[in-house]
Image 1: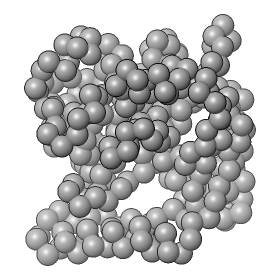
Image 2: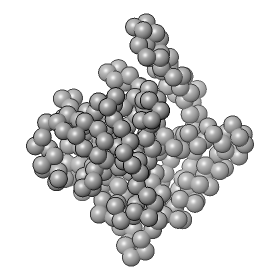
Image 3: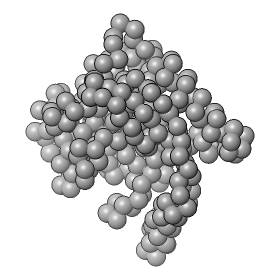
Image 4: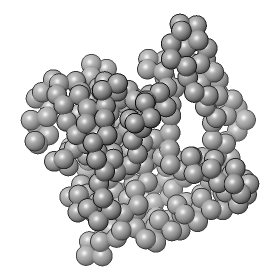
Length: 260
């Protein structure tokens, strides 16, 4: 099914291979949600929302490369063409894209210019840039307290209305950033991939803060760029010209194709 046919429908059921699972955010409208997106079986981008990931049943908690089936309808509060409002209670994992299949599945979805994607009206893209640098910055105490306060208010609200308990959330004390170059030129962005934050917390517990950060830089700044990777990008709902790094996708290089 091509994108024009998808857009002509108001609701439906489909499957998608998940590529993006960003770190949790708290908003006034939907509470705690996770930016999730993937490609359907015809390689069309779809954004799934609102997904309160940590409140999913264990058997629904999907990861990157999982194939999920879900019912959807077009939202009335998000006009990005890929966005689909999902009933997360009926979402199910139906398979997983095997490693040998990934490069072939994504081959025609990799683009070279985010500017050109915006000109086409798109708000999701997969790009394989030249990685110039990967680094981290410590968040200020004010930033950490502000993030934590949003989740505390959400948890208190859930208790007040006897809703499903909200799992406590610990803000990551660091921002992880990429400097990269595409056909559009040099860019810099904060990486919002949940995998990086989860990996940091896991390694901090095992090895301590200093060693955890060293390992993060070695994996996402050295190993991934050397072996091959792509950045899954998405625009901000309120700032459509701003591209965010929503996901880091390990993907072997195709040496027959240029970076850009």
